[in-house]
Each structure stands twice: as C-alpha cells, then as structure tokens.
Image (cartoon, rainbow, N blue to C red):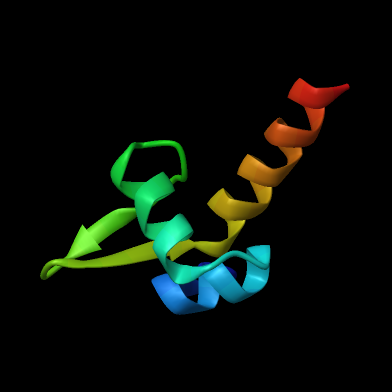
Length: 59
C-alpha cells in the first residue's frame, strides 16, 4: 500500500520548512492535509502532487 501518512514534523522536514510554517500553510488550506484528533496528518502522495503543482505554477 502506498498510502504513507506523514505528521506535521515529517512534512516540515520533507519540505525543508519550519514546523510553524508548515502548520500555517495547512491551517490556511494551502498545504493538503487533514486533522486526526486535533493533529495534522498528510498523505505523502498528496504532498508530492502539491509540489508538482507548485512547480507548474512557477513555470
């Protein structure tokens, strides 16, 4: 199964962001994620698709 779920800390590390920045982007709906019991979680495939979309927007 390729449905790897990442925590906020893991996404921040993956994107080379501060945790605060990743939290803000998620809370603003700019980073694709969902809450489980008050904690943010992210599907790795959604984050990779988001990266691809960001790259497309800048070109």
